[in-house]
Amino acid sequence: MGYGEIYNTTWWGVALDTARTAGTEPDFFGSQMKLLTSNQPELVTNGDFATDSNWGKINATISGGTGNLNGTGVTSMLFQDILTNGKTYRVTFTVSDYNSLGNNDIINDNGVSLYVLNSNGTFTFTFTHNVASGDIYWRARNGGIFSIDNVSVKVARLELDQIEAKKCLADWIHTTALQELNN
Image (cartoon, rainbow, N blue to C red; front, side, top):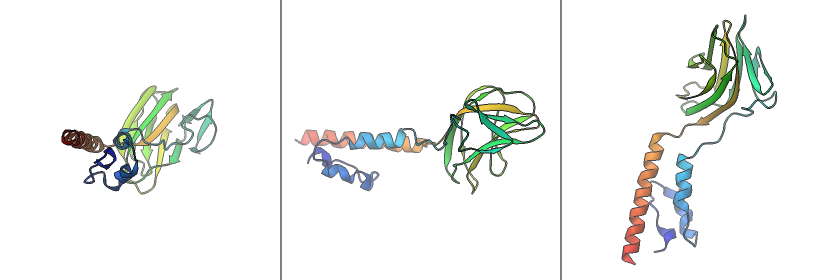
């Protein structure tokens, strides 16, 4: 039995079937571990606000490399339609020019506050989207003012994936050790 034939179909299934035909010692486990535990693709387009594009705007502007919200007398919002109902997301962003007046937050399409902004800085939070439509909004109202930059929204890999990947690593090491003992 060669290295390419060692795989655990109880969890990996057809994802590793290609390892059989690799012909040399494949790194099939390493690539699968990276798939489970690595960062997911970026969902936000133009999160660095390099151009005045890709963001929906209501009483907001994009200039100087930031998204700028001013909720003085109006509700100001920047948004993108990137979320899927039932998925968990990790959101990271930087706030500048924050004032303590009014209300500044991040909301979903139902107007439910996902995260309340209360200072300048870089912030990260995780939430599960529970609305059929997919917009995420940065919102300033009742006199709130702030700017955002370096916005990132990615699907969050759940701890269960990492636990399962570690279990498969242990199975793979055990199977490889048994093969070497039998040769």
